[in-house]
Length: 103
Image (cartoon, rainbow, N blue to C red; front, side, top):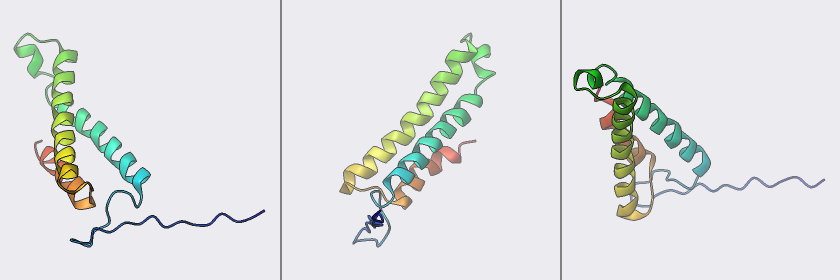
């Protein structure tokens, strides 16, 4: 049997020299997906008791808070991607950094 060739799809941003989405796209997308789930959980769990105070069901309060956190991250990722059509590791981390520090 013939051996499979290892294909290096590493792409570096010429301006910054950083590795960008595309080099390990599946890894980056999986990382982003799992981090978005973590944002949903962290944002949602922080308001479990707050919904009861204002008369909103716990499930509704958790869902709304989680979706708001996810929407914030997705918006930042989209804006970073719109700038140059690439997502660097720094841009991905920056999109999550403000949500991570809200706790």
